[in-house]
Image (cartoon, rainbow, N blue to C red; front, side, top):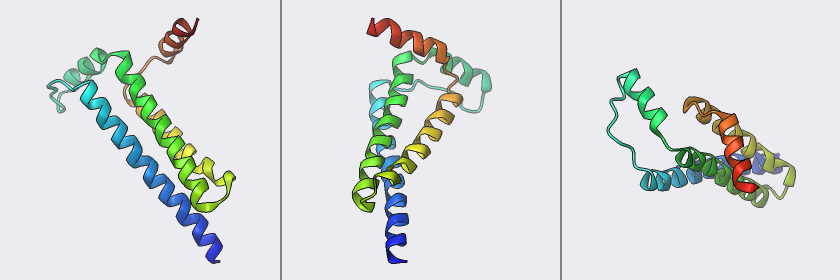
Length: 120
């Protein structure tokens, strides 16, 4: 029973730490790409703001979830000593990243073409 609680606690702590890493990396992104004045109560203002965000700022959000997933996997593996449990924080962060990208309405075809043009 103690071993089970250690594993559950390790996974919970790793999810918490990965969320903190995402918040830290996104706060760095907010320093690099500052947010202009937006009326958050006006849907049209929010829509214009979302369209004006550069693609590099949106990629930085993806990078923050990547950093959170990696750190969560390392912490989970370190605390639980089981490699298979490291996937749980990655799943949570992947879901969070997907929902975040869905909320900022990024065109995934544009993102894929951006990466293809920079790697060739």
